[in-house]
Amino acid sequence: MGLISNWSPRLPLMLDRMDLTGAFDVVVCSAIERLEKPQPAIFELALARAGVAAEDALHAGDHPEKDCAGAIAVGMRAALVDHAGSMPAHANARYARTLDELLATVTDLSATP
Image 1 (cartoon, rainbow, N blue to C red):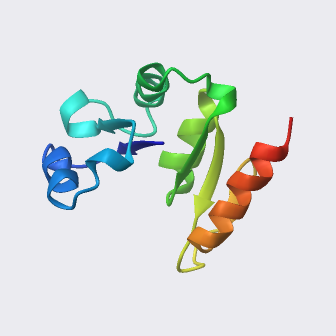
Image 2: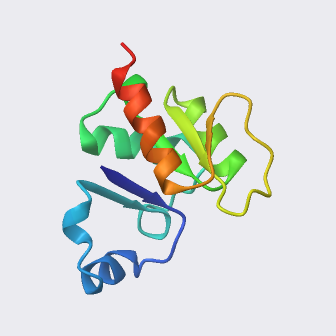
């Protein structure tokens, strides 16, 4: 599991302080890499570091353009996580309101050949 974030260079330190560093195989932070979602290069960098092909990856995020469109542009599957239920579904992405729904999406996609 990886993390791609448009966030400050403090991200690795924050993950470490919350004892979450070990939860991720790959962490790609925009401020460190000087790349931002939805730029294809940030997704491609995460895929390369993870050693995963785009078609075998799912990117889940809370922004239709930065997360969904960006991931889809490089060939990844995408899921829009909309906790507030305030965003329209993205035409080419799965939609989840909760993390339980996201888990069901991951399970469903894992079962699909």
